[in-house]
Amino acid sequence: MITLKIKKKKLKKKLKMFFWLFAGAFLGLFLFASFAYIIFQKANYNLVYPGITVNGMDLGGKTEIQVNEIFAQKNDQIADVQFTFSDNVDFATASAKELSFGYNENLIARQAIGIGRGENFLSNISLITRSYINSFSLATSFQYSEEKLLETLSPFIRKINKDPVNALFTFQDGKVTAFRPSEDGQAVDVDQIKNTLNSKIPALFSGNESGNIFIPIPIKIILPKITTDKVNNLGIKELIGAESSLFQHSIPGRIFNVNLASSRLNGILVAPNEEFSFNKALGDVSSFTGYKQAYIIQNGRTVLGDGGGVCQVSTTFFRALLDAGLPITERHAHAYRVGYYEQDGPPGFDATIYVPTVDLKFKNDTGNYILIQTQIDQDLQKLSFFLYGTRDGRVVEISKPVITNISPAPEDLYQDDPSLPKGTIKQIDYKAEGSRVSFTRKVTKNEKEIISDKFTSNYSPWRSVFLRGTKE
Image (cartoon, rainbow, N blue to C red):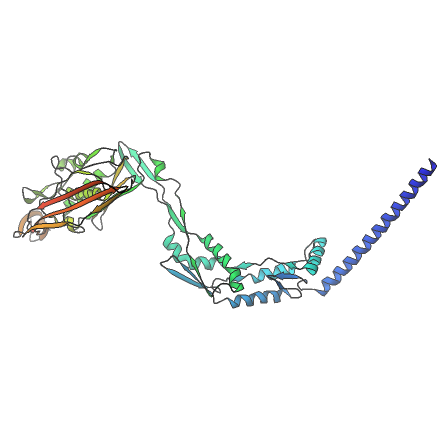
């Protein structure tokens, strides 16, 4: 028992001696390391510590200014490199110098001189030792001026960038009172261009890139928050047909009637499998329903009558139906070739109506609703029809008109007009040859013909008509 106690005392004494010996050694080592660190710091005062590299280049022993100058010189070597940005139509160029493109010499110099000079003593010792023994590779920092890049890209941004358009659809009392289809927006993908620039930098400095770098302009699509298919469940998603006509040189009453008649068709919905009647949609055409007097064709003559100009609307609508590839179940040509309808189109593409007997009809065979929209450009005196629905893949082919049976126009005709000042002469009709005009239309769907029709117009010869003012 006494022997065991003696052994424990001896062991405890040895452990205490070992502890103090180890503590002394550690303290001595610490003091030596501290002294060596101080000497090392003084020897490398304001110099990058040995073993610190960038891209394999040893920066040890260089001042911050010298490091800065090294990479500034490298930037000078590529200063004339040209970057060409293009959208395959337009081009914009900028040099590396203009873009401030290259090494970020200021940041590299600050980082290099700062390694081993932090606030943590042990961390500093570790970094310095690691650099001295195995070297320390500092990550390369590159730069370019985003401001100057955007300035270079600004012509593309102005041309390409377009905000998305949210859909608008308001249905009231059986008619669409407000409609606007959604439209995707688009923008230059500047972030992708930046990524491309960043990827070019290492290769450029390594000599693997030529002196001229081509960068295509990428475009990103911006989706609207509200799409057309979300604001209605009638299958009205996109434009399926559109056409227009000019009514320039029309008298004021005719212009008024074109506006009024087109407004009464605007916003009408045509149900699937419904046969649409232009006359039924238009309603009564008379002074009682707001129409003014203008010149109409009646009994082979051009005379003042209620609603003159309504046929401008039916003609334009007929053209839109042709474009959409819809089956036209009733159509009548004018008695003669009207100059208004050939201002921007060939002969034979007109449709007359006379409420209630002479009509223009079509059938909606698309399987979805069709929305009729009208638009008038008052400055151009241009009427347009837009038909919206769901495209079903139909393809329309319309032939050029064939003109036969030509006969000469009669002598000019002058008519008194009490709305014009006395002495004023104004031409409202232009002489036209009599002729037979025909054209064909073929509509295919999934490479199968679904419509094949021929439209024939027998036009009588027509004289020029002049209005002679009689108003005192």
